[in-house]
Length: 458
Image (cartoon, rainbow, N blue to C red; front, top):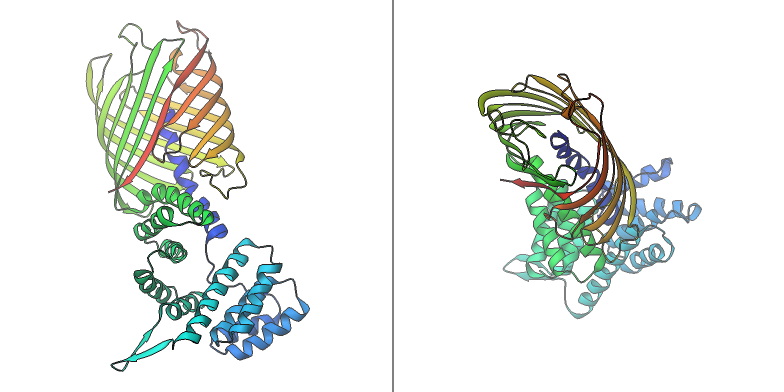
């Protein structure tokens, strides 16, 4: 039954991870106003195009708040808008030398480099050339205009200008990265993924590469959730040394998104092991397929109703099955999933809480499970990591079969190679104890195998 709940948890933390990535690497469109009336008025002037008046107020503000480097950054953009490049560079330099915010420093350096390039162009040639009464802008003029539109909150205009610039400057990965974040904000995820992949493949900057690769992982997990059609596959394979038994669980959903957080479609569910027999059952073996309806009430609470045909292997019985499933999955903590050249934090602690309750009509039985797992993750480069964990697992059913009613304490190791879609490898030692009596005895075993969750937009 753990298979019913392990698929949902990772999907629900992806958006919060992506917001964290943008906060570290992305560009912010709107600078938040301070509480003072003068600063509010300065932003009001700036946003309405009264740049000169806004500069006066911003300058007065920084005289009494010299540590507020984001206002110096704003002054740099303001002076750049009126083509006062010397004062723009002066303010950008102040940010570079005094700010403790990596994003502010990055923006100041990028904009300073554009201004210096534009100043060179102004010395050697005219920025605007008249051709058949049409004004043609040079690339740097267009790029500066794109950043102005971005800073003013005009994302669509900024995208158009950035795209035009990229056509003649395809190797400028800074612009591709900016476009990736802008397309993400517009929920155009395919375009965002394309831009991140361009940055990952072509950038020479470690920070850009790390931002792109982490975002690629997150987007690939998110995109099926927002697609009209998608497929998610769950595959759990494990060998139990005590039972000397190979166990497999395969679940596949073809999803159709019919409303926000509401899905329908088709599924197949297979549970097998290598040792069960009609007279000695270690696991309920079956093949089941049919249709489903799924609703995400909350990001961590899901209800699914399956209806389909089932073949019970050991009972040699074909029947129609109805299976309502209520699933809860929550993660305390947000471990990173990628480590690159600029990654500083590589060790994370978190706790997973899984729980499910379901009714299985073919067995005329209600099943329940609660599983806690405390995990230490160590990033080892790229998408690879090791995890050391402790687990506490409790299962039960209303018919109180001995093999369905037990507790389990485990300690294990996970390993994820540096491939996005590669399975998670694990090995764990568990102590299992049964409380209903019967032929099944308490046991200690080693379990080893792999777990694959694969999601794909269609």
